[in-house]
Every structure is written in C-alpha cells, then in structure tokens.
Image (tube, rainbow, N blue to C red; front, side):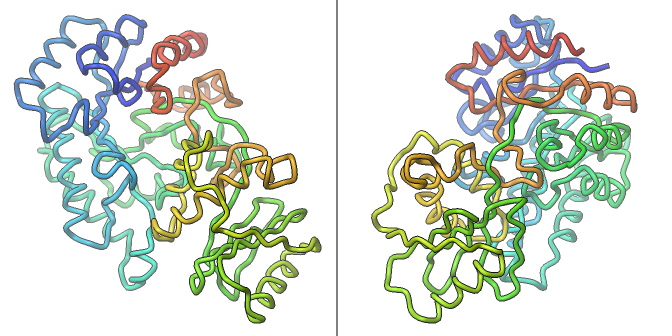
Length: 413
C-alpha cells in the first residue's frame, strides 16, 4: 500500500508549523520533515521547537513519514557537498554530523526513517586516485549507523540520484548488500529511476523488496549533454548525447554536434588545437565545419534557463565547480535561439542522465512518467509505505503544486 506524503522542502517560504497545516489541509496522510538552512535548520532548532512540531503533528491527521537530511544544506551553490565520501575527513564528518542530527530529530519526533544521498565523484577524487570513494562511503554509513541502538526502530536510507556515485537501483542494492544491516535500506525516487534506468518500471519492481520510502515528481525527455574533460582516448556516442569537451590547458570548450559543432575560445587557436578539434570531430563522424564562438561575447547574466542549468551542472561529476561555472554561459547560449540561427541547438531542457530524461522535478501529471505502472511494480513486489512529493522548484507556486499533485496521484493509490 502506498500512502501519499509531501516534502516540506517544497514549502520553504512558509513557517514550518504552517507547512504542516498546509499539507494536512490538502489531504495528504504524510509529511516529509526536510532540513532546510532557513526554515528548519537542525543546528538552530531547539528541543522546544521539536516538541512544538511533535504537538502540531499530534493535532493533525498528517503523520511524519521521514526525516530528510538536506542535500543543499551546507552551501546552496554546491549542493551535496561535502558528502559522505569527501576525501577530506573534516568534510565527511560535517555530513556525518548532519545525518546523526537527522537521527536525533527522528527520535524526538517518533519517526523511523532518515534519508540521504551518496554524493558525487568530484575533481578531488579524480586528482587523488589512491582514495577509494566507496570505502569512504561505506565507513561513513557505518559511523552513522552507530548512532542508532540495536533496539531502536530507526532505519537509514540511501537515495540513488542521477550523476551520483550511487546512481542506479542496482548500485543502491549493491550498497545495501555490502552494508548488510537491518537498519539500512533503499529510498527510491521514481524520477531518478526514470532518468537512470532504461526499463525503469522493472527496475522499480526489483528494488521494491529493499525499499522503505519513496519520492515522487514528474519529468520528461530533454537534450542529453555530456560535459567531459578532453583526453586522447575519449569515446563518444552521438546517438546517446551531444558532448561538451573541456580543454584544461586553455579552459575552452568544444561542442560535438553532428550538425553544428562549436568551439568556444577566448584566445587565438594554435595549430595543435586545430588538429585536436579536427581529430575529435572526425572520430565522432562529424562532417560539418566547426564554427568558432568568442567566449567573452557570451551573455553571462541571468536567463530563463538558470534553474535547469543549475540542476544540470551540479549533476556533472569529476570536474571542478570553476569548470562547471565557466560552462554555464555556454549552456545558456545553446538553449537560446541565437545558437542555432533562429532555433536553439538544445531545443529541450538540458539533461545529464543515462536515458536523456531531464532530472528536473515537475508536478505529477505535467511530465511523461507512468505512475500507474510504477506504483503497481512497487506494490506487486512488496513495497508498502509513504511516497513523498518533492517539488523544490515550485516554492513560489506551492499551493498549485500541493493540490495538483494530490489530485493527480490520488487516482493511483
């Protein structure tokens, strides 16, 4: 049986107790208690604040489904960092401390689920190949588990996410098996599966027996763009994605596109770079002539695409934030009609996923995800619990998101 819930992460312009009232009034049986640096900061809230939340929940029909330890908590422009597998021990301990605080808040509220993500392979991992990120992640999870006594009914959950080290259902299941604890299980986000699984419905069915909690939103197909560092043995599949190749020696970029390859430069090209560009395009089967675009003439201010580009860039592993930020005006240009002579080269939202589905949480019913089949696969294979709608892009239109989601999803539960 699936019971609907709604995450407070989508209600952050309300006072926290008012958010509980709003979810209760909308008819949801459950509510996700999500940490937020401004609304429900786990290091600012007192025992009295938590007691007030507990009393509020006792006077409403809505019940607390899970405590979500916020991915965006520490530095909003660097979500998920530091992670449980950061090479820096101080960074890992900050994230471990946040998860442990989640356990303490769950304990005080009588909630039995606490969720988090693995984090991404970052440039710090790439530059330190002797560091094993999986060993760091496993050790950090074990440290978090030690905060839960054997006789306490609290379970920690890992949420696979596009681009993360733990990205697919199978990777999540592999980690659950390795941790091998009755207090560690899966948190499945349906659109993450939609983004990361070729057959997401069957993947949900396989994960169901190990799943204790769900996130729900909607998504649709976009333009897959892989941002990668140049290397001599780079392989590309243009049927799968376009490629934006970063050259570390000049901090310039090459878009590999069958019809309109572009080189973004800010200094004259030498013969070596011209040869490298020709070789890359030839190896990808691109016959069109490359067009050169002056990087310094790109618009670097705010655009209507900022939200989708932000979500896209933070999901790109293995590159520094400076490399990603420098790519931002390029991605915005590719989304504008100017890039393609009247039609954008990327004429749909930009994606960095294993399927081309955009990891951008939309209101259920406004995308292309098959909720009926997804829910059936989960319940037929043993899942029973809360499924929380997570719509952090809709904070300003929270009433529409809250009510429209409930109206659409109610037909499937």
